[in-house]
Length: 233
DNA sequence: GCGACAG
DNA sequence: ATCTTGTCGC
Image (cartoon, rainbow, N blue to C red; front, side, top):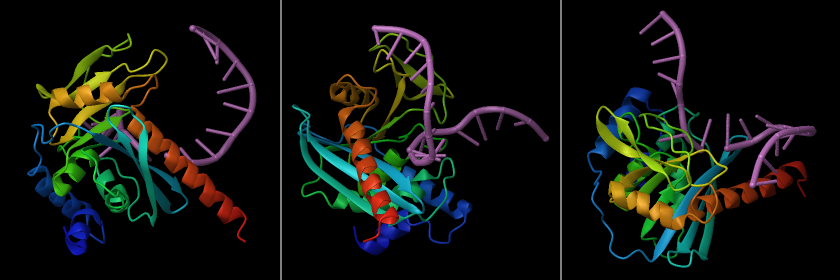
């Protein structure tokens, strides 16, 4: 996909929220909820951190079986939109696309630190990105944006996240000491596969390795930038 | 009208 | 997300 087309999908530019909502609807039409991958050999994690008016998007690619890091990438951008619930795809989109395209080899599936189809109009960052880029994605968040579910209390316990009688994701107790995490398909990943992939990536922490490591990396880059800002040499 | 609301 | 100290529990 060329650069101009990508901007149309991810750059909020000077468009109104109404226009942005329309664009989300266009992307949602492209979402596929069946598995669109074969054997998973690599899985990536994507997360962002912020510093003043800049956003740091970090991506980590891991070997699916061993969960060993293969590649770490990041990009720093000026944020183009304030945080507005349900419009996160336009706030973090451009940076995420840049980081994603920096990978030397595209991952078989990517886990985002955000919502998937568990969004008011099914346009969570993971679902939106996956639909536009036509790649498999899963969303893993820490808070419920929409939907309701019984809360799991025992590690491994999980329940369906429901909205209007439809399942839009899962709520999973990933760790004894942590609050449950919310999992949802993004694109080209079924409801069951989304849960299975995330469970496979859990290694004793609240978050699955891909997302946990991406979060750490984004934080490290942030600290570096902070030093430069305070100590310009 | 009121409350909820990913990062 | 970010700002921040101590504190409870394993």
